[in-house]
Length: 268
Image (cartoon, rainbow, N blue to C red):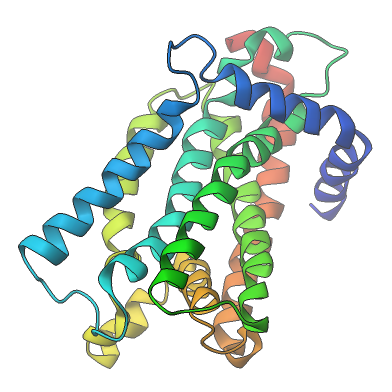
């Protein structure tokens, strides 16, 4: 397992220039065929944020958070990493079918394809993080040294997604219905992750169950970084739990990818 894992990371590092160029081209081509181009990349997330804000804060005044922060700040700092997770998982799962013409070329190293989706979606992620920073600053929450932890949590998200998408992308050519399963799971996961609500509104027993979701660590970490609420090493149990999950996904993903890769061209 370790040999397979190191082999994939070695290929990614060796082809880093090609990977960066490919991810940039992927980002550009995604909206090249539409009249308004990249404008559409901003519309859906912005409309989603405004809808949640209006419904839950203005309309229902639901009190999903503990009232410590303005709801729009709380929402943005949680939904920005969620958008990145959702976009990468959806696009990277389909990457081998999307680029089937490259999969059939012996000379092209297809190991970089899932990673290219992580990077191409990261461009938009940076933009929305800037928006989140502007909104939080306008509400009086200024960056501190602890805010730099966003770099760490972004790395956590990318590593977690790397292992997960190696599995889903490798399975998708043989089982296209995996996209439907992911869609259903994402709907459930959205409400089981602290994107719209604060974990402090639940009893301790329920909090323990909710923290079993590995995404809790990353999304709550983003929020803590935005609001400068402590350092990640102050939560050693959660950190160890998350990295155990991530390492397992990376190991399993590298093996699954290696076993299924020789058969991609037969089914695509």
